[in-house]
Image 1: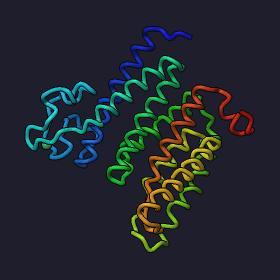
Image 2: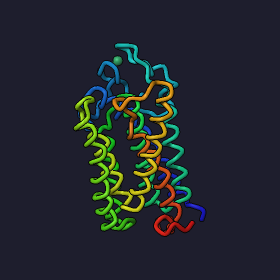
Image 3: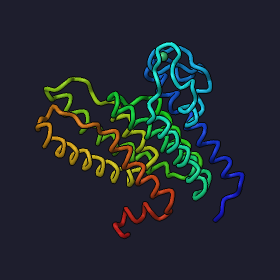
Image 4: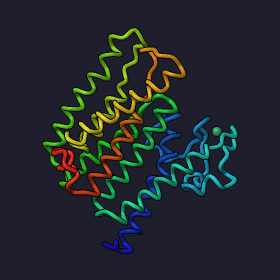
Length: 259
Ligand SMILES: [Zn+2]
């Protein structure tokens, strides 16, 4: 199937909008201002920035990339993440039905945001989680997903959440609950449904455990030492999410263990 020029153009537009939203969201989250703020602010000092900084990828090459007040410069990584989102959206729209491509593009964008924020600041911002909830609701509405599967997915995520929260509640470590991880699990479960959720939570836990073991060799073993769980959920969600939108029989294969 060769997609029409209109669909590719739409994919390019989606890619540009998502890519330019990424650094804007990073800035508003860092500064703690409303996500609906139209003004563009510096991630570091919060002063208003010229709109040319909103242009994805290219903004990092312009002379205005530095904040005129505090001299803060957006990390080069941002341009790379924007590029990845842009390319991913175009790829998605060129190989999938537009309704699926839109969902997976937004999911990719939100999971990149979650991963970056969790690794950098140990938070899973609501600003990105709402995007994942939105595509879950959208998927159910346009019938790419089964409502019962989504509700069972939520039930499964609730059980998994107990395992995330309880050890911290009763552990002697810091008393902050990993509610960000819980929100993320619930949000992805809504879109994934229970079968894919089961796989995602299993693989994510396995990867987190392996990482915990591996880093333990260098940093010493301690129950207090935390490993960010969000990035592993994000990675597994992308793998199984792409599998599902590319192969209509994917869920059946996973359910019957026949590949
Ligand atoms: Zn600044």
